[in-house]
Length: 414
Image (cartoon, rainbow, N blue to C red; front, side, top):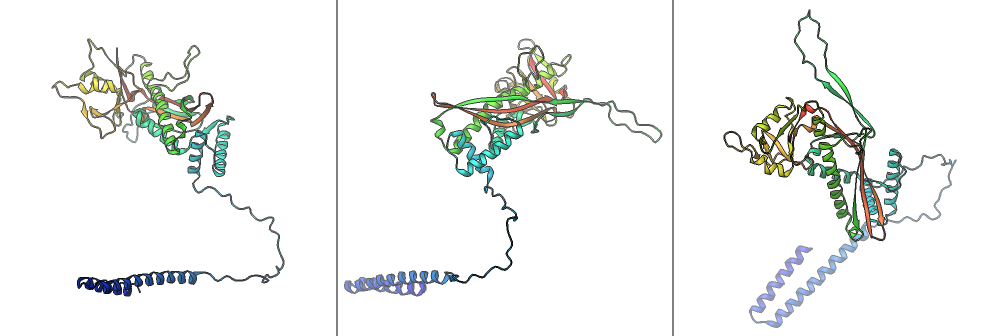
């Protein structure tokens, strides 16, 4: 039908244009009127065809009045199995929105409130806490926090972190013993003198509070979650990285500091004669190529594969980037493709603010250090009505310790 309509319309248009060219105005007006009538007829026909198609597709309604049939030998259904519990299509997404709304002081929808209460009740029962203001951070938000911490602090990102609830005991090697040897049939295999010990990771409380004005809480849910993620990651990440490097460990009877992870630098300096420490003096014994080589020499063979150099930004660009070998060639090679800012002796140099200003830490964190998250991150919230502010406190229980000091070298100012 459409093809015939278009053919007829084009003929009339050609006719009208020809009449106009001949100066026959009235005849051209008549041809235009025919085109308009043709358009109207086609439009009406199209609508009628659509209505006809709709009627054709309607189902036939059957009248069931007075057509019921008596039931023969009816059975009770009181023992029928209950219907399966229905769950939201995406429970984690529902909880994520409910978490954000709760933190922002917004009302929750019925489904959001049910999911929010159930997940947090299960969490409080599992962790044996009755604090109603403890709120479990959604998995996607927690993952974002840990990811940002790893990006801001490479020493955290390089670590083989575990997430085991409660205390964790790790078996570690205390003495390496001899390697395997070759024997003949008549010779008995010698006993091994490999020594093992236990490393107990209990728990150190890590928390940080940030304050947000009520006006700032008017942002969108996605913006709010991004803001909270960045702030908690920044503040808790700083403390976590500092603990990995400089953590004092568990306090003794006369100590006044709070329980902390065992820091790598602390463990290295606590050893007798400090074999993993290389010192320098800014006036008589400068930090140079030879000192860097000395530090590489104290790392046990096998640990350099995967090791990195960690230092503050000022140390990297103020000292390391200016070092030269005996031929005057730069020791530092810029390379931003390997996860750091450059390389020295083939090792990636990474900016790490957890290292002290006058120190450089070299080592294999993935194999030489372990950290366990006994309790993953939760959030506490407290409103201050007069100040129109809300405190948000991120909280976690973590512990870490050195598996072997032989995986590290510490360069420090004497």
